[in-house]
Structures are given as structure tokens and as C-alpha cells.
Amino acid sequence: MKPQAIALATTRETRAARVRVALTGLAIGAAVALTQALPAEAQDRPMSFADLAEMVSPSVVNITTSTMVSGRTGPQGIVPEGSPFEDFFNNMPDGDSPRRSSALGSGFVISADGYIVTNNHVIEGADEILIEFFDRDTEWPAEVVGTDPNTDIALLKVEVPEGETLSFVQFGDSDGETAEVGDWVMAMGNPLGQGFSVSAGIISARNRALSGTYDDYIQTDAAINRGNSGGPLFDMDGDVIGVNTAILSPTGGSIGIGFAMSSGVVNNVVEQLAEFGETRRGWLGVRIQDVTPDMVDAIDGLADAQGALVTDVPPGPAEDAGMLSGDVIVVFDGQDVADTRELVRIVGNSPVGKEVAVDVLREGEMTELTVVLGRRETAEASMPAPQESPEEAMPEESVVLGLTLSESSDELMEQYGLEIEEGLVITDIDPMSEAASKGLLPGDVITEAGQQQVASVDQFRDRIDEARDAGRKSLLLLVRRGGDPRFVALSLVEETPEADDE
Image 1 (cartoon, helix red, strand yellow):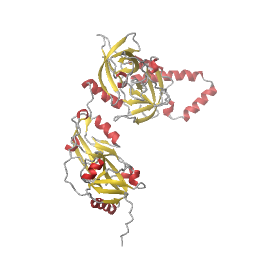
Image 2 (cartoon, helix red, strand yellow; image 1 turned 90 degrees about the vertical axis):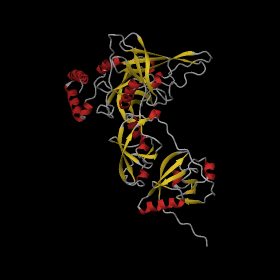
Image 3 (tube, one colour; image 1 turned 180 degrees about the vertical axis):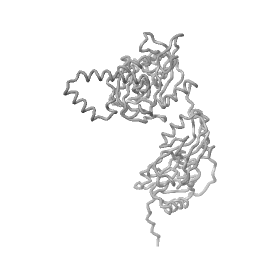
Image 4 (cartoon, one colour; image 1 turned 30 degrees about the vertical axis):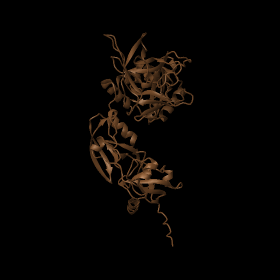
């Protein structure tokens, strides 16, 4: 335990002792019986947050931003919809003259020389940023070092007078033993512009995703309101395990569902912003989708619905390493991949240019690839231009697994606006079929069946027969819609043969 934590624990024990001395003999007996009945973890609940609040308060700041806006339009784009900072800007009267609008938020100091972390939406679009410290009477101007809209994090810097230092806090382990569901946490900030304020609660849930690619939120019932944005969420050691970012509320006020971006994400972003002034995330260069339970039987060698299924491999690091569409990424850089969200987060946190071992499941066998990661921010996906195909007669249609299929032709490509020359075009779907329930539509193109390319109905039927002979209950299809690929698993129900005409 850290020295700070020891001091807090000692203080709590002293207060607890005073309470026990004041109890009567009967109350003491009841308290002892209750203590014996409770688990050890429940007995460790804090008697007070006063010492923790006193220790970290000098490192928490209020942030005031100022922005010139049109009298008619208001501050568009400064605050994302649904954020705890939404509607915090003053409503401006109609008029054509530019007016100055102010907003408030929170932040915290992470270094003695003046680096401050907050939310991007707190300072986005602002032309003036002022920092108010808990234990100082003056406001200090701040400059933006860098921002990351993807995680809603911004890094600021104030000029600290020579000979002075600022109190600061450090990031804790958001995946550690002090950040488990049910653990105590404390939020601090500037809710509703009321000044420095403390609220406490527990971690309600972990690994929440809202709308971002790199989301890894800690859900808490500690009261978080507008103005708390950018403020810290502390564990009981006084370390920051999250940055308060959003609330879920039908009223706009706290109802006990708040979200803090985990320190595991924030710390990496802040380090990059401090060094480069921008983020530099790793880039694998694949399109992926989650493995669903109905796909497990259709993928040879896969036991559970886990991993990231590769749907397309455009030019980039993955293609250079030999990755193929249909591969299932199960291990990346020594870390097991549960789903696509986890893979995106792991790759994004990896350094650009790092040589990474990737284990993929391919045709029932594990294959290890070595990928040199690119940089996501500068990556440009380039798709090969379609080649012209000679005119051909309209091919015949066939009905298989509830799908009316036709080989690709110029007429169909023009009718559906297709750019894919090879594959089977879905021209109609039985509304009562499983294919319809899986969301397949006319104009979709099947390019693979059973992880093998198909260009004719006969090849499609061969893939069905092969899957049935192998004892499979479903067939994995690679379907493209508007150039975007995805895998769909269809059950292999024995079709009733059509009666021959006599």
C-alpha cells in the first residue's frame, strides 16, 4: 500500500475507534456480531472521504472557456450531443453581431510543471482558456498542447512561475485491484458551475462502450453533472483511474449513471499528446467483424464465438504480412482477442512501426503472421479499380437456401450499381427464409461460401454439399454490399427437391 493510502487508513481507523468507544455495551455486541457476519472487503469501506479529498484537491482545477459566436447560430460543434457539458453554453439572443459565450468544465494537473488533462469537448473551439486552482486566488491562462476527439481527451499547459511547482496527481491502474466493480471511487470537479465539489460512489460496471472506436468507460454511480466533464475519478489511493466524460440521463441531471474514460486509455493518449502534440495509433489495415455464435459451426477449428473475423484486406500492413479475408484473429501481440472492439483498442495502443506477432485461424489451422504496424491517422485505404468486363447475356437465376441467385453481369451491375465483377448477385429473397432474417437484401453479392470463392451457382451448391458432408450445420458466406464486406452464417436445411415436369 502507498504511504498516502496508509495515512488514510490510519485516520479512518482512529475515527472508527472513537465511534466504538461511544457505543453502549449492547450496541458493541450488535456491532461485533455484524462485523463478524460481513466479508472482510465490506468491513474496509471508508468511514470518510475527507482525508482523500484534502489530499487531491490542490491538483483539481476548474476550467473556463470563452468563444466568439454568432448571435444567430450559437456555438455549433463545441459540445457533442449527450455529453454532460451539453447546453452549458449561454443561450444567445438573435442578432448578427458576434458575441462572446463562456462555458465551464473541470480538469486535473498531472505534472509539477503545469500539464493539465480535461475533455476535448470542454475546450474545443475556445479562443481563451482560464484555469482556476483550488488553493490559488488567481486564474491562469492555458494553451492547448494537443487533442484527441476519438477519446474526447485534451492536454493543456499553463506556465508555472519560476521557483514554483504545482500539486499533481498520477494515473492509476484502471484494470487493477482498486478498480473492480463494487470498489469505492470519488469524483471531483465543478458541477453546474458551483465550484469545487466532491461526490463518491462505487464502480458500477467496467468496459462500457458508448459511441467511440476506442471506448473503454468505467461506469459509476458517483454523482456527475454538467461541469464535471474532464474532472478526475479517483480510487481510494488518490490515483486517477478515469476522466469523467458523460452521463446517461433523461433529465440532464445525475441519476447515478455516469461514465469516465479509463486511465488505461487516457494515459496512453496523454503521453502521445505530450510528445507529439497529436495521437499516433497503430494501424493493422483490415476490415473486421465479430464472430457470432451461429458462425462457430461454420468456421473450421473454432470452438467459441471469439476473435475478430477478417472480412477484407486492403493494401496495407496486414496484406503485406499475408493476412487473408476469412482469417480469424485470435491473438495479437501475445494478447487474446475476444472481439473486434478489443482488437481495435489493442492495435490503437500499439506503437507505430512495431513488429507484432498475430495468430490467425485459417482453414482449421493456426497460422502466425508478423505484421509491421502502420499509422492509423495517415493511412489511406486504396481499393483496386474495377476492370471492364465484356458484354454477356443475362444469366439464369437459381433459388438456393431461400436466395434467388444470379451470376454477375453488366445488366445486374448497372441495375444495382455494383462494382464487383465476380460473385453471385442476390436478386430476390424469400421473406420467410433465414437469409431474410439475417438482413440480406437484393443487390448483395456473395463472393465466398465456406471461405472459398464462388462465381457460379454450381460452385455455390458444391460448397453446400461439402459443408454437409463435413457434418456442418451452417455455411459461412462473405457478402458485399456497396463495397463493404461482412460474413453471414446460414443454416444448411435440407431443401425439398423441385418436381420434374412430366
